[in-house]
Image 1: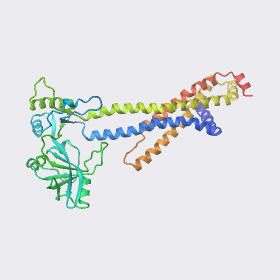
Image 2: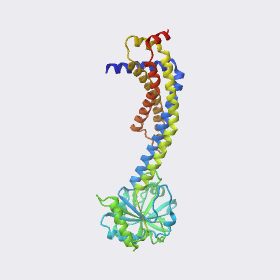
Image 3: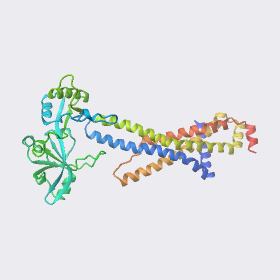
Image 4: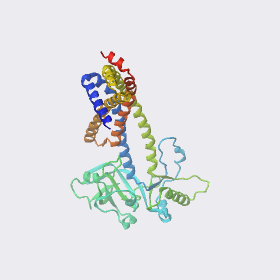
Length: 414
């Protein structure tokens, strides 16, 4: 233990001396390591932050929820759209039958959307998502109400002209006033506001409940023909029921509801968020590989720089090595001494790269809506890669120093 501490102390002193005595040479040599670590870890930091945001957005859709639709979700590969375009849309009748027949579903809801202008007196907001939803939509779609209430069962069944609106829409239309009980105008009809959704902000995909209007679907269908609209049936599994179990049941029920023959292909799609997650997994794997390739060239240059410093250090300290050996220093002592020095030098370059990344994450997070986070995992990865580069770069110079003959070494240094 004492020997190791001694080696660390001497290696630190030699490395520090190399930086002080040969500032320009050392800084230029360490620049490769700094740039390499910066490239690799910055790529991982950006995409770890993106992945975290994406997974949070996907999780908000519900991990125990399935979506019965006309079109399947797809991430990469061929998409044979011609097989799907003649399929019927998900309908209210499909949803009602699933509600009656399913034993594994905890809640089932129907949703369909159009984009319209919403008005209140002289104020109006364009391009607002107006959604027709069934009664149990609040059970399958995650949102909270800041004011008011959701639709009652009677109101949904009768198709009453009421609405739940997003926080930003409420602010834009009513300024500082209370929207509850006020009547907004959509499709030229007066619709009473009964609830306001708590402000959420946009997720990674740009989706948000902040600018949306929810109407009972039985009222919505009096304003819009649902026949050819891209609708979705959202089904939430009961506790302890897996998505695979629910998928199998829904597949059988939908085939029965639509009276499909045993040999016929499904004329519907059952989607889940896991499809999106797997698609992004493959995307991030490719991006990570690109990050390693970009940073790898800089790390290679940095490694040669460290090796160059160590060869020069061996030459400058040949006399000292000879004296140490003459006084009884073993080969492994000399070897470890130079290896420690190479690792220290590489770590210094790597730490500079990590400091630059940290400063950039703070600046970007505080000046933009995107949150960058330098994780502990990436910090340890940067330190580990720096140490490995230093170790590899220092092996040959250290081995050369350890093999020096003490008499020749002292004579060379005279």
